[in-house]
Amino acid sequence: MSSRLRAKDLIIKRAREAGLTSDSGQALHLLLKQPADTVIVNGSECEPLGRAKRELLANYPQKIVHGLRLAMEATGARTGIVAIDEDCDDTARQILAAIGQDGYLRFLVKLFRVPRRYPSGDELPLVHAITGRVIPSGGTAKEVSVLLLDAHCLWSLHEAITGRSVTHQLVTVLGEVHRPFTAWVPRGIMISALVAAAGGPKKPEPPALIVGSVLRGKSVLPSAALPATSSLLLVLPAKHRLVQQHATTFEVNRKRILAACEGCEQCTCLCPQYLMGQCITPHRSMRAIALGLTDLATEIAGAALCSGCGLCSAVACPVQLDPAQLMFAVGQQLLQAGYRPALITTAVKAEWPARQVMLSRLLQRLDLLRYEINPPLIGSLTSDRVVLTLETTPRLKATPVIRDGHRVKAGQRIADVPLDSAGVPLNASLTGTVRLLAAGLEIRAS
Image 1: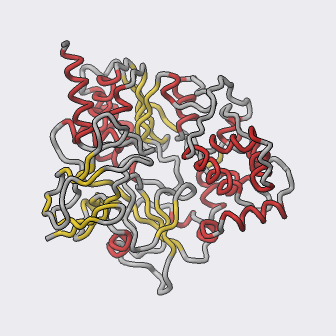
Image 2 (image 1 turned 30 degrees about the vertical axis):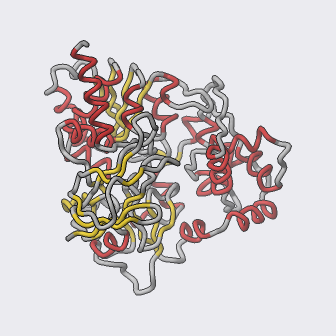
Image 3 (image 1 turned 180 degrees about the horizontal axis):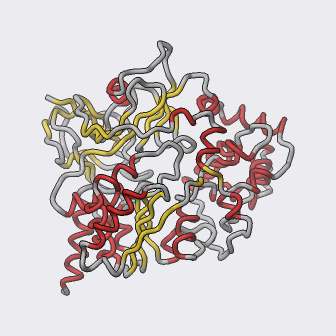
């Protein structure tokens, strides 16, 4: 066996042992097994109010670049791209310095500046902007021989290959709190602990909490645990427009669309998936779903291609309907039922460059501009309790390998999956005593 193959096997093995996943929840070791000619580091904070990727690239450029090298070695890629926001000049210099220090990467890796438009950091537009390749409708970056990985994913790969346990994630807490911050926190930390660490809510009435991202996130209770792939906790007043939108049920939204949709097609005209050549027409899909027209199978199936970016609801609709909720919910149901869109080669619409939305405009439209700050990186937060889900990858659960009441150390394996499955093992993020729950594990520090 050649040294390159041995190195590849070691990288894949360490990625699995550490339980690493991509930002979409896919097992990283399986992604690294697939050959690619280009690896892209997605360091762009195209999500409104996002800060974690910027902090990672600014504070750990050598680790990110080393993680990129590992991914290139595993996939056999001969080209690497580090994509960062166009306004991060200091970070760009640090990344270029880190690349220049690596004699192997200095001729293979380039820097790409991503415009501050939404959603320019998504898979389809980012791959097209960097490589000029168009991902087929219903496909992913692998169809065009590209591996797109989040900056945190590559930081974690560096940690795993150097023998360190990946027990923490980087999260930013913003909004109606006294002390917004960015910090490393143990995986599975409670939402209430994050709000308390930020000095608590500014107002006495209970706030609304959104995790993940502004437009693609979900509302949570303070008693919930922070999801492993979330890097933002947004604390908002209970009457904020975004909170009311999250609270609207599917059925209420469906009836509003039936009553008020004008058929103007603006949701389709601004849809990034449609503009990037995907076989999706939100105005048709939305009407078919709202009316229950099951004979319009093509229109309803188009919902499976919805990325959930939310532009149709936040900006496009002139009567403030929420097509995104309807489309994304039905699309996820189709995918969970086993439906997979056919791969169709398409072309990017000529209107795409002119229809991207400036992030500042989007934040103003959502009444979030006052939260656009750079909170300090305060290091690491400790916690006396974490709750970890057994669903380490979408729809696949790990099996506990420890007993109730067992004492574990941070980094120790506490749940596992078969070697040939698409899941990853689960490692403890805290030293303490384990309690088995219905859908996860609780660890209390002792």
